[in-house]
Length: 509
Ligand code: XMP
Image 1 (cartoon, rainbow, N blue to C red):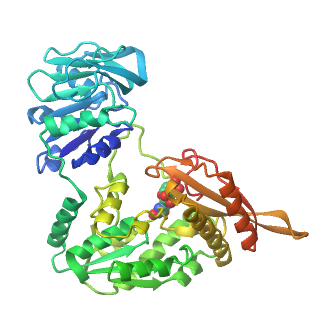
Image 2 (cartoon, rainbow, N blue to C red):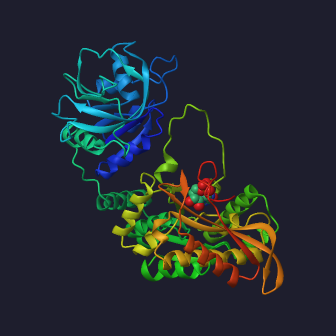
Image 3 (cartoon, rainbow, N blue to C red):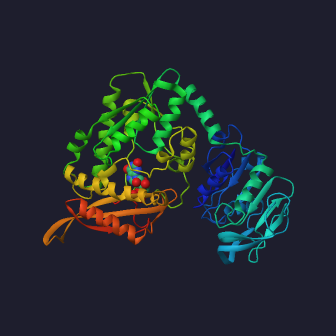
Protein backbone atom coordinates (compact mmCIF):
# COMPACT_ATOMS: atom_id res chain seq x y z
CA UNK A 1 0.00 0.00 0.00
CA UNK A 2 0.97 3.63 -0.34
CA UNK A 3 1.06 6.21 2.43
CA UNK A 4 0.13 9.72 1.28
CA UNK A 5 1.33 12.45 3.61
CA UNK A 6 -0.86 15.51 3.33
CA UNK A 7 0.74 18.96 3.33
CA UNK A 8 -2.56 20.72 2.72
CA UNK A 9 -2.93 20.70 -1.06
CA UNK A 10 -6.42 20.97 -2.47
CA UNK A 11 -5.47 18.02 -4.71
CA UNK A 12 -4.37 15.51 -2.03
CA UNK A 13 -7.58 13.49 -2.30
CA UNK A 14 -7.02 13.21 -6.03
CA UNK A 15 -3.71 11.41 -5.48
CA UNK A 16 -5.65 8.79 -3.54
CA UNK A 17 -8.32 8.64 -6.26
CA UNK A 18 -5.77 8.00 -9.00
CA UNK A 19 -3.97 5.31 -7.00
CA UNK A 20 -7.25 3.57 -6.20
CA UNK A 21 -8.02 3.56 -9.93
CA UNK A 22 -4.75 1.67 -10.35
CA UNK A 23 -6.05 -0.81 -7.73
CA UNK A 24 -3.46 0.32 -5.21
CA UNK A 25 -4.65 0.64 -1.65
CA UNK A 26 -3.60 3.95 -0.08
CA UNK A 27 -4.33 6.14 2.91
CA UNK A 28 -4.00 9.88 3.46
CA UNK A 29 -2.57 11.08 6.77
CA UNK A 30 -1.43 14.51 7.97
CA UNK A 31 2.30 15.14 7.38
CA UNK A 32 2.96 15.09 11.13
CA UNK A 33 1.09 11.86 11.88
CA UNK A 34 2.72 9.47 14.33
CA UNK A 35 4.33 7.14 11.78
CA UNK A 36 4.48 4.24 14.23
CA UNK A 37 0.71 4.27 14.43
CA UNK A 38 0.09 4.03 10.69
CA UNK A 39 2.90 1.86 9.46
CA UNK A 40 1.58 -1.65 10.04
CA UNK A 41 1.97 -3.20 7.58
CA UNK A 42 4.87 -1.13 6.33
CA UNK A 43 3.87 0.89 3.25
CA UNK A 44 5.44 0.02 -0.09
CA UNK A 45 5.77 3.68 -1.04
CA UNK A 46 5.25 7.20 0.28
CA UNK A 47 3.90 10.23 -1.55
CA UNK A 48 4.41 13.73 -0.16
CA UNK A 49 1.59 15.96 -1.36
CA UNK A 50 1.65 19.56 -2.45
CA UNK A 51 0.71 22.34 -0.05
CA UNK A 52 0.04 26.06 0.24
CA UNK A 53 3.10 26.95 2.33
CA UNK A 54 6.62 27.88 1.26
CA UNK A 55 9.40 25.66 2.63
CA UNK A 56 11.17 28.90 3.62
CA UNK A 57 8.33 30.01 5.90
CA UNK A 58 9.15 29.96 9.59
CA UNK A 59 6.30 27.60 10.40
CA UNK A 60 6.66 25.48 7.25
CA UNK A 61 5.55 21.88 7.78
CA UNK A 62 8.61 19.64 7.71
CA UNK A 63 9.72 16.15 6.80
CA UNK A 64 9.92 13.51 9.53
CA UNK A 65 13.47 12.11 9.59
CA UNK A 66 12.15 8.58 9.76
CA UNK A 67 10.76 8.86 6.24
CA UNK A 68 14.18 9.12 4.65
CA UNK A 69 15.70 6.55 7.06
CA UNK A 70 12.98 4.06 6.20
CA UNK A 71 14.39 3.40 2.74
CA UNK A 72 10.94 3.14 1.16
CA UNK A 73 10.44 4.71 -2.32
CA UNK A 74 9.30 8.34 -2.04
CA UNK A 75 7.60 10.63 -4.54
CA UNK A 76 7.41 14.33 -3.67
CA UNK A 77 4.77 16.36 -5.50
CA UNK A 78 5.25 20.15 -5.77
CA UNK A 79 5.71 21.21 -2.11
CA UNK A 80 6.77 17.60 -1.45
CA UNK A 81 9.59 17.93 -3.98
CA UNK A 82 10.66 21.30 -2.62
CA UNK A 83 10.73 19.85 0.87
CA UNK A 84 13.06 17.05 -0.25
CA UNK A 85 15.43 19.57 -1.86
CA UNK A 86 15.20 22.02 1.06
CA UNK A 87 15.92 19.25 3.59
CA UNK A 88 19.17 18.52 1.80
CA UNK A 89 20.15 22.14 1.01
CA UNK A 90 18.30 24.76 3.05
CA UNK A 91 17.73 27.76 0.83
CA UNK A 92 17.73 25.76 -2.41
CA UNK A 93 14.10 26.70 -3.01
CA UNK A 94 13.16 30.29 -3.81
CA UNK A 95 10.28 32.35 -5.10
CA UNK A 96 9.94 31.93 -8.82
CA UNK A 97 10.17 35.11 -10.88
CA UNK A 98 7.21 33.94 -12.85
CA UNK A 99 4.70 32.03 -10.81
CA UNK A 100 3.40 29.11 -12.79
CA UNK A 101 -0.27 28.15 -12.81
CA UNK A 102 -2.00 25.96 -15.33
CA UNK A 103 -0.64 24.15 -18.35
CA UNK A 104 3.02 23.66 -19.21
CA UNK A 105 4.86 21.35 -21.59
CA UNK A 106 6.94 18.66 -19.97
CA UNK A 107 10.05 17.65 -21.93
CA UNK A 108 11.60 14.39 -20.88
CA UNK A 109 15.33 14.02 -20.25
CA UNK A 110 15.34 10.47 -18.93
CA UNK A 111 12.54 7.96 -19.39
CA UNK A 112 14.00 4.97 -17.53
CA UNK A 113 11.63 4.70 -14.59
CA UNK A 114 9.31 7.46 -13.34
CA UNK A 115 8.70 8.90 -16.81
CA UNK A 116 8.56 5.56 -18.65
CA UNK A 117 6.00 5.26 -21.49
CA UNK A 118 5.27 8.98 -21.47
CA UNK A 119 5.58 10.97 -24.70
CA UNK A 120 8.74 13.11 -25.10
CA UNK A 121 6.59 16.20 -24.88
CA UNK A 122 3.28 16.29 -23.02
CA UNK A 123 1.00 18.64 -21.11
CA UNK A 124 1.36 18.86 -17.34
CA UNK A 125 -0.49 21.04 -14.83
CA UNK A 126 1.47 23.38 -12.60
CA UNK A 127 0.36 25.32 -9.55
CA UNK A 128 3.24 26.83 -7.62
CA UNK A 129 4.88 30.07 -6.60
CA UNK A 130 8.26 28.64 -5.44
CA UNK A 131 10.74 26.63 -7.49
CA UNK A 132 14.04 24.87 -6.99
CA UNK A 133 16.91 27.01 -8.17
CA UNK A 134 19.68 24.79 -6.84
CA UNK A 135 19.25 21.06 -7.21
CA UNK A 136 21.10 19.07 -4.53
CA UNK A 137 24.03 17.22 -6.15
CA UNK A 138 22.62 13.85 -5.12
CA UNK A 139 19.68 14.43 -7.51
CA UNK A 140 19.49 14.51 -11.30
CA UNK A 141 16.94 16.16 -13.58
CA UNK A 142 14.76 13.77 -15.58
CA UNK A 143 12.28 16.31 -16.98
CA UNK A 144 11.98 20.08 -17.53
CA UNK A 145 9.60 22.66 -18.98
CA UNK A 146 10.38 25.92 -20.77
CA UNK A 147 9.72 27.77 -17.54
CA UNK A 148 11.12 25.36 -14.97
CA UNK A 149 14.42 23.63 -15.54
CA UNK A 150 13.60 21.34 -12.63
CA UNK A 151 10.23 19.73 -13.38
CA UNK A 152 11.02 16.10 -12.52
CA UNK A 153 13.99 14.69 -10.61
CA UNK A 154 15.33 11.48 -9.15
CA UNK A 155 17.89 10.71 -6.50
CA UNK A 156 21.06 9.19 -7.91
CA UNK A 157 21.25 6.39 -5.33
CA UNK A 158 17.98 6.05 -3.42
CA UNK A 159 14.46 5.52 -4.68
CA UNK A 160 13.49 9.14 -4.17
CA UNK A 161 11.66 11.07 -6.91
CA UNK A 162 10.01 14.42 -7.21
CA UNK A 163 7.85 16.39 -9.64
CA UNK A 164 7.09 20.09 -9.66
CA UNK A 165 3.80 19.56 -11.50
CA UNK A 166 0.66 17.74 -10.33
CA UNK A 167 0.41 14.23 -11.82
CA UNK A 168 -2.86 13.63 -9.94
CA UNK A 169 -4.98 16.20 -11.80
CA UNK A 170 -6.88 15.20 -14.92
CA UNK A 171 -5.24 17.97 -16.97
CA UNK A 172 -1.82 16.35 -16.67
CA UNK A 173 -1.96 14.14 -19.76
CA UNK A 174 0.14 11.24 -18.55
CA UNK A 175 -0.23 11.79 -14.82
CA UNK A 176 -1.80 8.41 -14.23
CA UNK A 177 1.00 6.68 -16.14
CA UNK A 178 3.51 8.48 -13.92
CA UNK A 179 1.76 7.35 -10.75
CA UNK A 180 1.53 3.85 -12.19
CA UNK A 181 5.29 3.86 -12.89
CA UNK A 182 5.90 4.92 -9.30
CA UNK A 183 3.54 2.36 -7.76
CA UNK A 184 4.12 -0.65 -10.00
CA UNK A 185 7.71 -0.26 -11.26
CA UNK A 186 9.44 1.69 -8.51
CA UNK A 187 7.54 0.42 -5.44
CA UNK A 188 6.95 -3.04 -6.94
CA UNK A 189 3.27 -3.03 -5.95
CA UNK A 190 0.90 -5.28 -7.86
CA UNK A 191 -2.36 -3.39 -8.20
CA UNK A 192 -4.41 -6.26 -6.85
CA UNK A 193 -6.77 -4.25 -4.67
CA UNK A 194 -10.24 -5.01 -6.07
CA UNK A 195 -13.76 -4.95 -4.74
CA UNK A 196 -13.62 -8.75 -4.36
CA UNK A 197 -10.46 -8.60 -2.26
CA UNK A 198 -11.96 -5.74 -0.25
CA UNK A 199 -15.10 -7.77 0.48
CA UNK A 200 -13.08 -10.85 1.52
CA UNK A 201 -10.89 -8.80 3.87
CA UNK A 202 -13.86 -7.01 5.41
CA UNK A 203 -15.85 -10.19 6.00
CA UNK A 204 -12.86 -11.64 7.80
CA UNK A 205 -12.29 -8.62 9.99
CA UNK A 206 -16.00 -8.09 10.81
CA UNK A 207 -16.24 -11.71 11.99
CA UNK A 208 -13.17 -11.33 14.17
CA UNK A 209 -14.36 -8.07 15.66
CA UNK A 210 -17.99 -9.00 16.36
CA UNK A 211 -17.59 -12.56 17.64
CA UNK A 212 -20.98 -13.68 19.03
CA UNK A 213 -22.34 -10.19 19.66
CA UNK A 214 -25.08 -8.37 17.74
CA UNK A 215 -24.87 -5.44 15.36
CA UNK A 216 -27.52 -2.82 14.74
CA UNK A 217 -27.58 -1.10 11.37
CA UNK A 218 -29.74 1.91 10.62
CA UNK A 219 -30.71 1.79 6.96
CA UNK A 220 -31.48 5.07 5.25
CA UNK A 221 -32.56 3.78 1.85
CA UNK A 222 -29.30 5.11 0.41
CA UNK A 223 -26.45 3.24 -1.23
CA UNK A 224 -23.88 3.50 1.57
CA UNK A 225 -25.88 2.03 4.43
CA UNK A 226 -27.31 -0.65 2.12
CA UNK A 227 -23.84 -1.77 1.05
CA UNK A 228 -22.70 -1.80 4.67
CA UNK A 229 -25.66 -3.90 5.78
CA UNK A 230 -25.26 -6.37 2.91
CA UNK A 231 -21.57 -6.77 3.65
CA UNK A 232 -22.09 -7.31 7.37
CA UNK A 233 -24.94 -9.71 6.70
CA UNK A 234 -22.62 -11.77 4.53
CA UNK A 235 -20.13 -11.86 7.40
CA UNK A 236 -22.32 -12.61 10.42
CA UNK A 237 -25.78 -13.51 9.10
CA UNK A 238 -28.64 -12.79 11.45
CA UNK A 239 -26.45 -11.45 14.24
CA UNK A 240 -27.15 -8.30 12.23
CA UNK A 241 -30.43 -6.49 12.81
CA UNK A 242 -31.38 -3.60 10.54
CA UNK A 243 -33.91 -0.88 11.15
CA UNK A 244 -35.46 1.24 8.42
CA UNK A 245 -37.46 4.13 9.79
CA UNK A 246 -40.32 5.94 8.09
CA UNK A 247 -39.76 9.42 9.46
CA UNK A 248 -42.58 10.94 7.42
CA UNK A 249 -39.95 12.81 5.42
CA UNK A 250 -39.32 10.19 2.75
CA UNK A 251 -40.15 10.46 -0.94
CA UNK A 252 -43.39 9.16 -2.39
CA UNK A 253 -43.65 5.33 -2.15
CA UNK A 254 -40.10 5.22 -0.80
CA UNK A 255 -40.76 3.34 2.43
CA UNK A 256 -42.64 0.46 0.80
CA UNK A 257 -40.42 0.07 -2.25
CA UNK A 258 -37.13 0.22 -0.37
CA UNK A 259 -38.40 -2.15 2.30
CA UNK A 260 -39.33 -4.59 -0.48
CA UNK A 261 -35.86 -4.39 -1.93
CA UNK A 262 -34.29 -5.00 1.48
CA UNK A 263 -36.37 -8.02 2.33
CA UNK A 264 -37.12 -9.64 -1.02
CA UNK A 265 -34.04 -8.93 -3.14
CA UNK A 266 -31.32 -8.59 -0.54
CA UNK A 267 -32.81 -10.87 2.16
CA UNK A 268 -31.68 -8.55 4.92
CA UNK A 269 -33.05 -8.98 8.46
CA UNK A 270 -34.74 -5.60 8.52
CA UNK A 271 -37.53 -4.19 10.58
CA UNK A 272 -39.52 -1.35 9.08
CA UNK A 273 -40.61 1.11 11.78
CA UNK A 274 -43.31 3.66 11.06
CA UNK A 275 -42.35 6.60 13.25
CA UNK A 276 -43.79 9.25 10.96
CA UNK A 277 -46.27 10.49 13.53
CA UNK A 278 -43.60 10.99 16.19
CA UNK A 279 -41.37 12.92 13.77
CA UNK A 280 -44.19 15.08 12.42
CA UNK A 281 -45.52 15.86 15.90
CA UNK A 282 -42.12 17.15 16.90
CA UNK A 283 -41.49 19.01 13.66
CA UNK A 284 -44.80 20.64 12.89
CA UNK A 285 -44.49 24.41 13.15
CA UNK A 286 -40.68 24.42 13.30
CA UNK A 287 -39.03 26.65 10.71
CA UNK A 288 -35.39 27.14 11.76
CA UNK A 289 -33.20 24.83 9.60
CA UNK A 290 -30.72 23.94 12.34
CA UNK A 291 -33.53 23.24 14.79
CA UNK A 292 -35.19 20.93 12.27
CA UNK A 293 -31.95 19.02 11.78
CA UNK A 294 -31.39 18.64 15.53
CA UNK A 295 -34.94 17.43 16.14
CA UNK A 296 -34.66 14.89 13.31
CA UNK A 297 -31.29 13.59 14.57
CA UNK A 298 -32.52 13.26 18.15
CA UNK A 299 -35.76 11.58 17.13
CA UNK A 300 -33.82 8.98 15.16
CA UNK A 301 -31.83 8.23 18.30
CA UNK A 302 -35.01 7.84 20.34
CA UNK A 303 -36.47 5.42 17.78
CA UNK A 304 -33.32 3.31 17.65
CA UNK A 305 -33.08 3.23 21.44
CA UNK A 306 -36.63 1.98 21.58
CA UNK A 307 -35.82 -0.74 19.05
CA UNK A 308 -32.77 -2.00 20.91
CA UNK A 309 -34.71 -1.95 24.18
CA UNK A 310 -32.66 -3.59 26.89
CA UNK A 311 -31.12 -6.24 24.64
CA UNK A 312 -27.58 -6.21 26.02
CA UNK A 313 -26.25 -8.34 23.14
CA UNK A 314 -26.17 -5.27 20.89
CA UNK A 315 -22.59 -4.11 21.11
CA UNK A 316 -22.11 -2.46 17.73
CA UNK A 317 -23.68 0.14 15.50
CA UNK A 318 -22.90 -0.08 11.77
CA UNK A 319 -22.64 3.11 9.71
CA UNK A 320 -21.96 3.95 6.09
CA UNK A 321 -19.29 6.59 6.76
CA UNK A 322 -17.21 7.33 3.64
CA UNK A 323 -13.56 8.30 3.18
CA UNK A 324 -14.13 11.98 2.35
CA UNK A 325 -15.83 12.36 5.77
CA UNK A 326 -12.93 10.71 7.52
CA UNK A 327 -9.84 12.28 6.00
CA UNK A 328 -8.23 14.58 8.46
CA UNK A 329 -7.04 16.99 5.81
CA UNK A 330 -4.39 19.43 6.85
CA UNK A 331 -5.79 22.93 6.77
CA UNK A 332 -3.73 26.01 7.43
CA UNK A 333 -6.79 28.21 7.47
CA UNK A 334 -7.91 27.11 10.92
CA UNK A 335 -10.97 25.09 11.82
CA UNK A 336 -13.62 25.24 9.13
CA UNK A 337 -16.96 26.80 10.00
CA UNK A 338 -20.00 24.63 10.50
CA UNK A 339 -22.13 25.31 7.45
CA UNK A 340 -24.85 22.79 8.29
CA UNK A 341 -24.94 20.20 11.00
CA UNK A 342 -25.28 17.07 8.90
CA UNK A 343 -27.46 14.50 10.45
CA UNK A 344 -26.11 11.09 11.38
CA UNK A 345 -26.86 8.83 14.30
CA UNK A 346 -23.81 10.28 16.02
CA UNK A 347 -25.40 10.64 19.43
CA UNK A 348 -26.48 7.03 19.70
CA UNK A 349 -23.15 5.21 20.18
CA UNK A 350 -22.16 7.29 23.22
CA UNK A 351 -25.59 7.11 24.78
CA UNK A 352 -25.95 3.36 24.30
CA UNK A 353 -22.24 2.57 24.72
CA UNK A 354 -22.11 1.01 21.26
CA UNK A 355 -18.89 0.58 19.28
CA UNK A 356 -18.93 1.67 15.68
CA UNK A 357 -18.42 -0.57 12.68
CA UNK A 358 -17.71 1.42 9.54
CA UNK A 359 -16.57 -1.02 6.86
CA UNK A 360 -16.55 1.49 3.96
CA UNK A 361 -14.84 4.33 5.81
CA UNK A 362 -11.80 3.97 3.54
CA UNK A 363 -13.77 4.07 0.30
CA UNK A 364 -14.93 6.79 -2.06
CA UNK A 365 -18.55 6.87 -3.24
CA UNK A 366 -17.88 5.25 -6.61
CA UNK A 367 -15.91 2.48 -4.90
CA UNK A 368 -18.83 1.82 -2.58
CA UNK A 369 -21.03 1.54 -5.65
CA UNK A 370 -18.58 -0.95 -7.16
CA UNK A 371 -18.55 -3.03 -3.96
CA UNK A 372 -22.36 -2.90 -3.99
CA UNK A 373 -22.48 -4.25 -7.55
CA UNK A 374 -20.09 -7.06 -6.63
CA UNK A 375 -22.36 -7.89 -3.67
CA UNK A 376 -25.28 -8.25 -6.09
CA UNK A 377 -27.23 -5.10 -5.22
CA UNK A 378 -29.31 -4.23 -8.32
CA UNK A 379 -27.94 -1.54 -10.65
CA UNK A 380 -31.03 0.68 -10.46
CA UNK A 381 -30.52 0.92 -6.71
CA UNK A 382 -26.76 1.49 -6.88
CA UNK A 383 -27.24 4.44 -9.26
CA UNK A 384 -29.69 6.29 -6.99
CA UNK A 385 -29.08 9.93 -6.29
CA UNK A 386 -27.95 10.80 -2.76
CA UNK A 387 -30.79 11.65 -0.39
CA UNK A 388 -30.09 13.44 2.89
CA UNK A 389 -30.93 11.93 6.28
CA UNK A 390 -33.33 14.79 7.18
CA UNK A 391 -35.09 14.11 3.86
CA UNK A 392 -37.91 16.34 2.70
CA UNK A 393 -37.84 18.05 6.11
CA UNK A 394 -35.07 20.39 4.92
CA UNK A 395 -36.74 20.92 1.53
CA UNK A 396 -39.94 22.45 2.86
CA UNK A 397 -38.48 25.86 3.53
CA UNK A 398 -39.76 27.63 6.58
CA UNK A 399 -42.53 26.14 8.65
CA UNK A 400 -43.05 22.40 8.37
CA UNK A 401 -46.46 20.79 8.16
CA UNK A 402 -47.85 17.57 6.77
CA UNK A 403 -49.77 19.44 4.04
CA UNK A 404 -46.65 21.22 2.85
CA UNK A 405 -44.68 17.97 2.89
CA UNK A 406 -47.37 16.39 0.71
CA UNK A 407 -47.20 19.21 -1.84
CA UNK A 408 -43.44 18.81 -2.04
CA UNK A 409 -43.63 15.02 -2.20
CA UNK A 410 -45.83 15.16 -5.32
CA UNK A 411 -43.63 17.72 -7.07
CA UNK A 412 -40.47 15.76 -6.26
CA UNK A 413 -42.07 12.62 -7.62
CA UNK A 414 -43.00 14.23 -10.95
CA UNK A 415 -39.51 15.75 -11.37
CA UNK A 416 -37.60 12.55 -10.65
CA UNK A 417 -39.95 10.30 -12.64
CA UNK A 418 -39.63 12.59 -15.66
CA UNK A 419 -35.83 12.57 -15.38
CA UNK A 420 -35.93 8.78 -15.47
CA UNK A 421 -38.46 8.74 -18.29
CA UNK A 422 -36.35 11.08 -20.45
CA UNK A 423 -33.10 9.23 -19.69
CA UNK A 424 -31.67 12.25 -17.89
CA UNK A 425 -31.52 10.73 -14.40
CA UNK A 426 -28.00 9.37 -14.78
CA UNK A 427 -26.65 12.63 -16.25
CA UNK A 428 -27.48 14.38 -13.01
CA UNK A 429 -25.68 13.82 -9.70
CA UNK A 430 -28.65 14.82 -7.61
CA UNK A 431 -32.09 16.25 -8.38
CA UNK A 432 -34.60 17.64 -5.94
CA UNK A 433 -37.59 19.89 -5.50
CA UNK A 434 -37.93 22.55 -2.80
CA UNK A 435 -41.18 24.06 -1.56
CA UNK A 436 -40.75 27.78 -1.01
CA UNK A 437 -42.74 29.53 1.72
CA UNK A 438 -43.75 32.14 -0.83
CA UNK A 439 -47.21 32.59 -2.27
CA UNK A 440 -47.74 34.45 -5.50
CA UNK A 441 -50.59 35.38 -7.77
CA UNK A 442 -51.49 33.31 -10.80
CA UNK A 443 -54.43 32.78 -13.08
CA UNK A 444 -56.01 29.42 -13.83
CA UNK A 445 -59.18 29.01 -15.92
CA UNK A 446 -60.04 32.69 -15.48
CA UNK A 447 -59.70 32.34 -11.72
CA UNK A 448 -57.14 34.16 -9.64
CA UNK A 449 -54.84 31.82 -7.65
CA UNK A 450 -52.60 32.65 -4.73
CA UNK A 451 -50.40 29.61 -4.20
CA UNK A 452 -46.94 28.26 -3.41
CA UNK A 453 -43.80 28.06 -5.55
CA UNK A 454 -41.67 25.00 -6.26
CA UNK A 455 -37.96 25.39 -6.99
CA UNK A 456 -36.34 22.60 -8.97
CA UNK A 457 -32.67 21.89 -8.47
CA UNK A 458 -30.44 19.49 -10.41
CA UNK A 459 -26.66 19.48 -10.12
CA UNK A 460 -23.62 17.83 -11.61
CA UNK A 461 -20.90 16.95 -9.13
CA UNK A 462 -18.26 14.36 -8.34
CA UNK A 463 -18.53 14.22 -4.59
CA UNK A 464 -21.08 16.80 -3.46
CA UNK A 465 -18.33 19.13 -2.25
CA UNK A 466 -18.58 21.37 -5.29
CA UNK A 467 -21.41 21.33 -7.79
CA UNK A 468 -22.69 23.07 -10.88
CA UNK A 469 -26.33 23.40 -11.88
CA UNK A 470 -27.32 20.93 -14.58
CA UNK A 471 -28.03 22.46 -17.95
CA UNK A 472 -31.24 20.48 -18.45
CA UNK A 473 -33.03 21.07 -21.77
CA UNK A 474 -35.60 23.90 -21.73
CA UNK A 475 -38.25 21.63 -23.26
CA UNK A 476 -37.77 19.18 -20.43
CA UNK A 477 -38.06 21.89 -17.77
CA UNK A 478 -41.14 23.30 -19.48
CA UNK A 479 -42.77 19.87 -19.47
CA UNK A 480 -42.01 19.24 -15.78
CA UNK A 481 -43.24 22.71 -14.85
CA UNK A 482 -46.47 22.15 -16.74
CA UNK A 483 -47.12 18.86 -15.04
CA UNK A 484 -46.41 20.19 -11.56
CA UNK A 485 -48.67 23.22 -11.92
CA UNK A 486 -51.48 21.31 -13.59
CA UNK A 487 -51.43 18.24 -11.38
CA UNK A 488 -50.71 19.66 -7.93
CA UNK A 489 -53.36 21.83 -6.43
CA UNK A 490 -51.59 24.43 -4.32
CA UNK A 491 -48.67 25.16 -6.67
CA UNK A 492 -48.94 27.85 -9.32
CA UNK A 493 -45.29 28.64 -10.11
CA UNK A 494 -42.10 26.65 -10.79
CA UNK A 495 -38.57 28.09 -10.90
CA UNK A 496 -35.22 26.46 -11.72
CA UNK A 497 -32.21 27.02 -9.46
CA UNK A 498 -29.14 28.10 -11.46
CA UNK A 499 -26.64 28.61 -8.64
CA UNK A 500 -23.44 26.63 -8.23
CA UNK A 501 -21.86 25.35 -5.01
CA UNK A 502 -20.05 27.35 -3.76
CA UNK A 503 -21.38 29.94 -3.12
CA UNK A 504 -24.78 28.22 -2.78
CA UNK A 505 -25.15 24.69 -1.37
CA UNK A 506 -26.99 21.79 -2.98
CA UNK A 507 -29.82 21.70 -0.46
CA UNK A 508 -31.60 24.94 0.37
CA UNK A 509 -31.47 24.49 4.15
P1 XMP B 1 -25.09 20.59 0.72
O1 XMP B 1 -26.50 21.07 0.84
O2 XMP B 1 -24.31 20.76 1.98
O3 XMP B 1 -25.19 19.02 0.46
O4 XMP B 1 -24.39 21.18 -0.48
C1 XMP B 1 -24.15 18.20 0.02
C2 XMP B 1 -24.67 16.78 -0.05
O5 XMP B 1 -24.95 16.29 1.26
C3 XMP B 1 -26.32 15.96 1.37
N1 XMP B 1 -26.75 16.38 2.70
C4 XMP B 1 -26.95 15.54 3.74
N2 XMP B 1 -26.84 14.19 3.82
N3 XMP B 1 -27.50 14.26 6.08
C5 XMP B 1 -27.15 13.56 4.99
O6 XMP B 1 -27.10 12.33 5.06
C6 XMP B 1 -27.61 15.62 6.07
O7 XMP B 1 -27.94 16.23 7.08
C7 XMP B 1 -27.33 16.28 4.84
N4 XMP B 1 -27.36 17.59 4.44
C8 XMP B 1 -27.02 17.62 3.13
C9 XMP B 1 -27.02 16.69 0.26
O8 XMP B 1 -28.23 16.05 -0.13
C10 XMP B 1 -25.97 16.65 -0.83
O9 XMP B 1 -25.96 15.38 -1.47
